[in-house]
Each structure stands twice: as C-alpha cells, then as structure tokens.
Length: 418
Image (cartoon, rainbow, N blue to C red):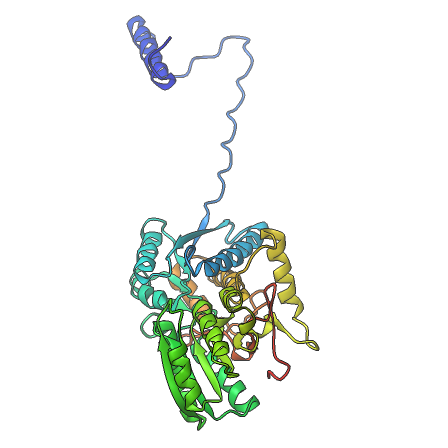
C-alpha cells in the first residue's frame, strides 16, 4: 500500500518518468511528427463556457432575537425578487445572489457586518438595516465606501442626501406615519386632547420629535408625554398619568411586544382609551401578547395590503402573498410592510443597474435619482427619487388599520379610515 496521497504519488511518478527520458536524451519540446498513414488528430475541444459571475447584493437586518420577524420578511421579499429576476436571465446577464448578515438589532454589530460585506464580499449595494439606530450607525461607513444603500427603515433622520448621498429609502418614514396618525385622531375622530406614549430608543423618540410640531401646527393639545424602556412589562404608572390627564386618545410609538403590555395595562385599569401607533405596533408580538386587549387599538400600515368589507385588497398585493406562500410555505408571520419593500427594493436596484448599464455605485446612484413615479413591481407604492429627495414612498399609500386585524399579511382597516 502506498503511504503517499494519490496526488503526491502522481507527482513522484511523473518525476521518475522525466528522469528516465532525460537519461535517454529523447526529451523534446516539439510535437511528435505524425507517422505515415496515421489518422489525422482531431482539433482540441473548445473550452466549456464559464458561468456568469454572480452579482452579490448585501442584506443586513436582525435574523435572530426579538426582531427576527423583520429578518424573516426581509429574506422572503428580497429572495423572491432575486429568484424572479434570475428566472428572466438575471441582471446584466448575471444571477443575483443575496448575501445576508445578522445585525442582531444592535448598532455596533450593524456597522461590523456592513464593513464585512463591503471589504470581504466586495458588494456594491446593500439593502437594510430596518432598525432606526442601526441605520444611523451605518451611514458613515456607507458614505466612506460609496456603495449604494437602500435602507428599509422609518426614522426620518436616517436619510439625508447632503450628508449621505448613496442612501435611498424605498419605505415610508416617521413624518408620514405621524401625519396619518394625527389625521385619523383629529379629523376623523375629532379629538383635540392627546397623549404620547413612546419607547426611549431612537425609534420612539424620533417619532415623538415628528409628532410634537405637527400637534402644535394643528392646534391640538398634548396633555401628557410618557416614555418606557425596551423590555418593560409594567406601564401602569405611565398609563395612570395619561388617563388622569384627560386625554382622548394615545399616540403610541414603539414595537409590538412593549405596546402589548400597554394594551393590557389599559384594560387592567378599566380605560377605554384607544392607542394609535406607528407601524411598529402591527407586529405579531402585539396581537399574540396582548390577546383580547389588542382589539380596539390601531396602527399605520400599507394601504395596498389592507382591506375593508367593501374594499378588498388590491390584486397585486394578494398575488404577492400567494407567491410568498408558494415559495416559502404558508407558515410565516412577517409583516408585509417588511417583505414588500425589500422585494420592491431589489427591483428598484435592478432597474437602476439596467438604466446605468453597469453596477458601478456612482452610476447606479445617478440612475436611482432619475426614477420618477416608478411602479417597481406595482405592489407597494410608486417611487420617486431625485438629487435632493431620497424618500421614494408616497404618503397616500399609508392608512390606519386595526393593529391586531391581520389576516395572513393583510390588515383590516376601520370603516371610517380615510
């Protein structure tokens, strides 16, 4: 039995053969002359065509922990779009491959994985993050590397074309949500005395910063302003002060898990006050943890993924949900306001690359700036960007829904919602 590996044995054998040839003096660099009457040698076969190099597209969001449903929606939406584009020949003749990294909803981790995607994977474009603090944290790295970044986040301050010209947002943002919340409470319900309940993170306090000047501009009274920390399970103190203030409704800005505690607290205190939240309240965590206490409360959501008894969900949104089911199975719980914009973001990027004729970030940036009322795949909104505008979502595509009114990715809205 040979103690050498096959490769080492082969090299040794060739060495012995070469030594033998040298000893006879018959080694030649010229091809041997054909023998008389020998058949002609066939031409060498052409080398097999090499598959086109993949076009890597980065994706950064929470894939683990309490915000993992965001990652679920992000992966489903973006990977579905990539599959569809690849089935039609890819982008510039190259198949798209999503390369995801888990930012754990942690700003420091988000910066690390962004830098890894840029330095090691050599991506020229990244989708995400979703969490507002993470989006703020990665902005300097994006600008330094000059890669295209489509942020699916709602914090108003995360997008600034003067400071960070490579960042675009194909998602609604906090100011639009605040306008919709106040329009419903003030114009539809006629409320003039309101309270704010928000988490203490950049997400919650960013929402407060949008709400307060709009309250003042509408001549509405802010009777109480309360905050809580992520993970709080008892908000009876904050809720008691809001109830005693005489407020007619609560403007809530936080995520579903904590706002479920607020809903249960209101029920425990015997209050009939309704919360209307930004889209963070519409997560599966809210309806699961709050249970029956969730029923009266409202949130902001995509109009195209909502319905009433007399106005069904548009066909495009229903077909999108059906494609998610066909591709990933029906046992998913992600918000469609996550999966849909990630899906559309891939199509936006693809359109910009096609118009530019290259994936060079500078040229793709200019192509994105030229998109005006672009429908992408027509399921979420129409997108308009410019050299001075990076917020592509149209406010008329937002609406108030029941926060726990979800029916497999579609949300029931109140009959009086405009």
